[in-house]
Length: 245
Image (cartoon, rainbow, N blue to C red; front, side):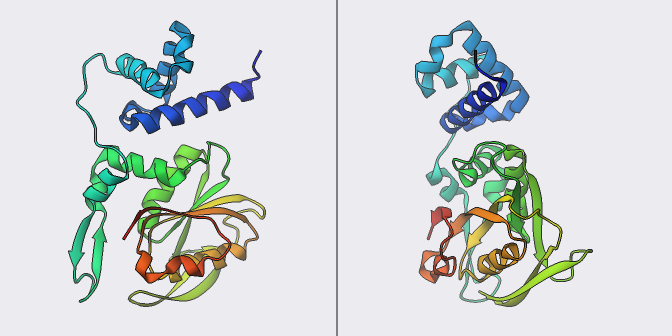
């Protein structure tokens, strides 16, 4: 007999593979999806070995008795939703506007799934997001991972005792801060931000987390501007970027 822990792990793995095949299944919520998976596999256990497509199709029929139109998926769909805005916030900068992606529930969910990568639920203690757009993705990822969310904010925005780190960024200079008691030493941490440009912001965030003596497992970015070589400032840390320019 499987232990409760192994059963939960198997269910979590099934949810991940099914959602990667058809992300829109998550639109009914995790509880409904979990119940649908259990119902489908109880009715036909062989579907567990029939492949992701067959299992996803059976679950889809359980959640939606009606036929759904195909949904755009994959990194190409994410890239197509990002709008390029020239000369913003100042002349010469090609700004990557992610608001169309965020406005599309399916694409937003896919981006969060991809930022999480192979980290299963409960394998991360805290997801850290960088002020401000990083909060959007990090908070959503924390919910999926059953982890806490910790913000790294601009100087002066946090009310309690803080560690601070100054850095140069693509449009000037800034200082980041984190509460001194935000994360327990030794905690497993995933750091998420929307953009890796020159790497100054991410490097400052890494320096702040280092003051808390945590275990930084990975840094995930929605977008990386490769020509700015920001990755070179993140030595020895696994970096995941969904889209590169």
